[in-house]
Image (cartoon, rainbow over all chains, first blue to last red; front, side, top):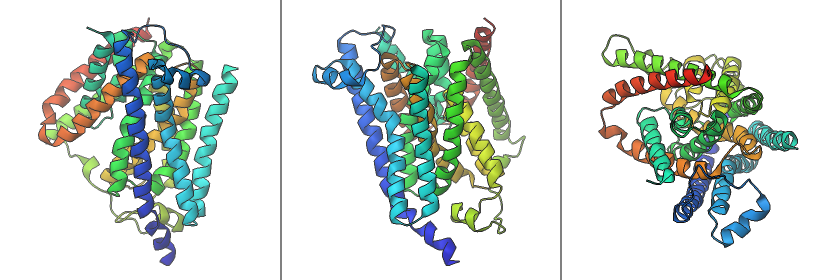
Length: 125
Length: 274
């Protein structure tokens, strides 16, 4: 019985911590995208115009010069990265609670994410 | 009027409609972008995936704070939805646009028929069995008990895993959150109460959709000028929709939705057939 109740009690605080990570990531992403959209409107750019391709090297320079593409790319990366950050947070939380099954599950999810990146880069190259 | 504003307004409508009807919104974004703005289907799917990740992020946070979503179960299953999504994204880049359009029209018809059944249930002609929570199953062993929550025990883990892989493939191919597969799998197969199943499914959208969105993003399948206005629109629409859901009679909305969805299915099918 203790075996059942111990792991179930641990994640209550973890739930709240993960919720904060998720919400913060989402709001940061949405703000970045919103700034990008406002700059798009101000510059008279249409969604149907040809868009610049993703180049991590130019994102920060684009942001510094208030180019919409910089904010939009960073916002999109933030949206897609938020769930992974949540998994890293879970990994730490479950590690602290010594819940090794869930640590293994978290590592497995991160491995799938890494495989996605490698496959995408591999296919592109 | 500016195309970006029209696209954003379309996103608001898709997000509001989706959240009022408990469908997410993914199912409406792809038709909006392909039929409304003539985007290639695969590009629309990429944008839709980003929209559903952003929309689910905030609501999943709320469900976690209220301890409705089961984090342990969600994470265990999302290992498999993510694997399915990885495979689905690779399939999406390997098959022609017409095949995707054909699959999408199949999904629309399935959702339309499910909604029609729901309408009949509203009128009391059919028992809404989905709303009844399954009885407690005390035979669950230790590992399954750890995935369980207050008042329910998980059963049939492996069929649930199979369903999760399938949900991931559907999500990555068609740009939806996949709740349409995950909720019935968790509720009817694994014995999770409906409320917990839909909150946990919502939590799982992020990891599931991001496993495939990474591939769409890095392979140039997401246009930032389309994604920006759409994601903001859907996010605003879904937020407004979920806050006003209890004040609106959704029955009329459902009838309207069934009409829209069958019309969209027909349009998608015409696209599939060239």
